[in-house]
Amino acid sequence: MSENILELQNIRKEYPGVVALNDVSLGFKKGEVHAIIGENGAGKSTFIKIITGAIEPTLGEVFFENKKLNKATPADRLELGITAIYQEFNLFNHLSVAENIYFNRFDKQKGLIDYSSIEEKSKKVLNKLGIKIDPKTLVKNLTVGYQQLIEIAKSISRTVKVMIMDEPSAPLTNNELKFLFDIIRDLKADGIAIIYISHRLEEIFDVCDKVSVFRDGNYLETKTVRDTNKEELIKLMVNRELDDSFPHIELEKGEKVLEVKNLKSNHLKDISFAAYKGERLGFAGLVGAGRTEVARAIFGADKLNAGEIFIEGIKVSINNPEDAIKFGIGLIPEDRKHQGALLHLSIKENISYAYMRKIANLLGIINDKEEEIIVKEQINSLKVKTPSALQLVKNLSGGNQQKVVLAKWLLMKSKILIFDEPTRGIDVGAKQEIYNLMNELALMGKVIIIISSEMPELIGCSDRIIVMSEGKITGELIKENITQEKILELASITEEEQNAKY
Ligand SMILES: Nc1ncnc2c1ncn2[C@@H]1O[C@H](COP(=O)(O)OP(=O)(O)OP(=O)(O)O)[C@@H](O)[C@H]1O
Ligand SMILES: [Mg+2]
Image (cartoon, rainbow, N blue to C red; front, side, top):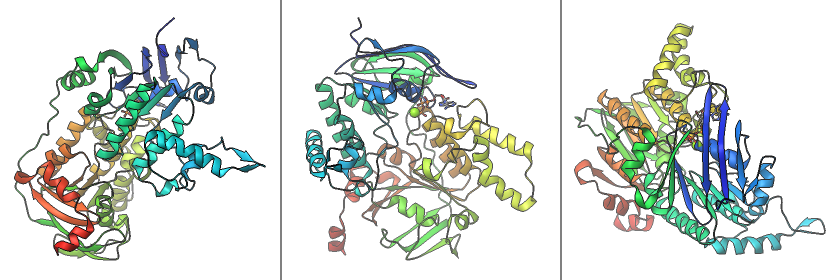
């Protein structure tokens, strides 16, 4: 008899050309928060899916409370108390919180859904988690952070014994993250086994007891969090020494490339700023401050009510992303899943699509050989983990999908590149590569605009930071004067305070 509530033995998972997991054995205990870390493509999500029954292992066994789970379907496992929260939510936006929590398990009265009953029960679940929202609220009206919490509420409304969280923190603000950690501590105190996946190593030290490291589909070892440190974990993950500081290079600021005057949209209130050749310009602000809206407005993705955009001194009219691309603007969007990658196409098709269309317009033909070489170069320089360039993007790990979107934009030869949350879901090693890449692009004279909620990253990467709050620019900080405190102060100025000031 094992004292582990969940135990995986000799798990192997093969895909054509890929060994996603190779002979992994690992157990989990009640009341313990157990992190799994590893580079993009190391096998973390595959491991999770084998636990939930979403996929079947090629070899190996899963034991739950000392019983083999072989034939158990995902629904059976959910019933047994094994639940997972994925990075993409499974919520129905147009339904209420209560309807989401009790979806498919409605109490009925005379054949009709008994709303007061599910609302009452939802209220109890939400109270237990300390979430103060009305169960009648429609999910689409909640912030991403709250939607995440509703996923958790949904899970704990059943019997839960094992709760898996695959990168739960990626979309959360600092406060929401603290709240998530409080909930995790409560779940732990209730004896639930928690499996936690994250690329942000600080979080492991905040909330986890144990940490297991995967590399290239292999399980390496498990450490007690108390007895390890960030450097050791990074070294285990990437198999080399890695300095996780920001590789900043000093650059002369060149002439003005982009100028934005009095941009107004439904959410933006009179945004004006300029950006210069070789400059790395950061945008800071809380979630919802309007940073992504500024990016989308410049890129022609959202409708503007007013405002002018100048590129190299010439006024341009940008009505859609095609226009923006034509004027040399590239946007690597925050929501890469939905806006960036064509999941059902291959890596090659994704990378070369936009770029090739551009040269095909000039030449009328696409040169296969050239295309292949270009795509290979990108795969190598960004270290996309894949058996071949023909692999479908949907078969790549989350982080590697993001690299493909990046590659596509890097090839577009844009003058202005906007990176919205460029390292979300990306492992430590690849983060460094992206920082180096931003530096190289700046060195080539491009304008780099960076939006990031990770404060150390934003500070480390930017020459200048514009801070936004509630759709307005509330301040600007230059390299020497940038501190986390100053950013936070500017980011929390409310509209009333702004009005009082002027
Ligand atoms: N359906 C599939 N077909 C082919 N290969 C797949 C499939 N699913 C996963 N893989 C491959 O298995 C490997 C492990 O992927 P997995 O998603 O488990 O990585 P991960 O550790 O979760 O990475 P990330 O941090 O990027 O999310 C990757 O090389 C991936 O491309
Ligand atoms: Mg994953």
